[in-house]
Amino acid sequence: MDFNRLLPFGRKAPRVAVIRLQGAIGATRPGAQGLSDAALGPLIERAFKRGKPCAVALIVNSPGGSPVQSSLIAARIRRLAEETGLPVHAFVEDVAASGGYWLACAADDIWADATSIVGSIGVISAGFGLQGLIDKYGVERRVHTAGGAKSFMDPFRPEKPEDVARLTRLLEDMHLAFKSHVVARRGARLNGEADLFTGDVWTGRQAVEIGLIDGVAHAVPKLKSLYGDKVRFIPYGLRQPWLRRFGARFGADAAGAVIEAAEERALWARFGL
Image 1 (tube, rainbow, N blue to C red):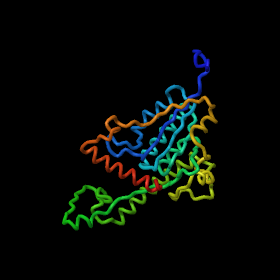
Image 2 (cartoon, rainbow, N blue to C red):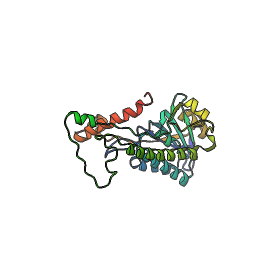
Image 3 (spheres, rainbow, N blue to C red):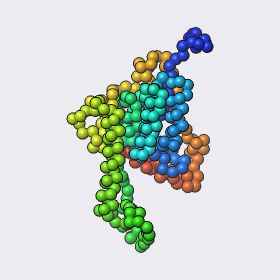
């Protein structure tokens, strides 16, 4: 029997708050289940401040998504880490790619399985050109704007070179922000001879060699090695609404759920998952 647990002033086992960051990043509509700063904010705040944890662990399994939401979530984690003085450790499961790696870089160190997929430090914009489709069915597209750029990249009109140039400038600026975040967080640990910012991905074992992560390790044994065998893990994660646990969605919510699932499936599929 552990008598320390029975004594009011006995030494308590250290606690590590464990935040699960699972899924695509960026809630695109009300009620969507993607990782967003609005949805995760209260949860992250509790993880850092409730119960006096000795550290915070991030369990990351994300193919990426919104650069803005990735930046907001990572910034919140860093702000709270600095306010509380708590160390933050990230553990990658299947994938921490693109925005998922952005989140992992909010930690002080990053660990992964040898076969995890890590990296994809780039920004992508994808869409469809549907002008041929509406022409085939005799549909006339009518757009009226005040401001020449308001119909930017309209999928029902032919692509314009000036629109592509403008989009490229936007993507390059977002890419610069991503690179700056990685360099600021990983510093001298990065392999200066490797081109890490092409959008390429690596396995966990390869990622150690180029400095994207700190080593191959799993959450429970690593955290026990850092904080002792008696460490307690306090889990935090997003909860699905009660009806959605049984697959119940209605009307516009059901249609939005199909689109949301297809978009997230496409993100995972980029990494063979």
